[in-house]
Image (cartoon, rainbow, N blue to C red):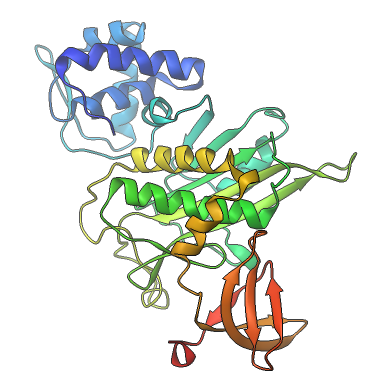
Length: 346
């Protein structure tokens, strides 16, 4: 999250209000202000002036935040302060960091952000929007799998796209999103993420992020009218990670995070739109290829119930994986899943 000194604090907070308009609750706006001030006190009157609301509205918002579990100290003379940073996902904190107009809604818990995005498409038929949650009860991965989504350790979000470019097919959008996630991580940390074709981000040999892209078909035109881009990223290690996931699932940070999750979420969105606007040039594919660690490796995949093996040799301009099969013939796969045979890889 952006850091501001006292001289800049009021103007920063006014920027929040101008950006978010009526889309954000007073509670979220109060929380964003308290988190900016960190452990410093700010009076209820000051908060009310910044938000243009009554002292009573601020008091109600503070009480609701306390009921939600936030530890807030209050004294009549000094005002309010957070006793400890929460790093909660918050619309009022994300929106000022996003470099375009975007409707953003955050949840404490939800069944699935992709499912919620589908439900909301009828209410937002012509504009992009972002659904983001602290926790998913029924997170979805590719091929019908569940996506483990514990509370307050990750970022689970779905971006609904409406103004689609001519190259907005699922494979290319997935590759574009993978590049954006890597760029955001690289921008904010010293980590070196890599991509496993087609949709997984790895760090130090473990998966830290998965991407699920779904097209929404227009029944009238039989064409894709919207695309939902789901991204789940593990920011902090989960001490309750199921035993079967421990060898393969990792996180960006093993201890305390050095990056606000709001900042990381906004950075991913910013990088995605930067890539998305240049998709017709295909330039982002070179960034994808540079980070794709499966190239040169022995891989296997299943097609028509038959297993094929070969060497991953490249990624074409449509995002498909090029493979030299064991019989020395060449093939491409545009979707599905591959396994890496490390024994047969260089």
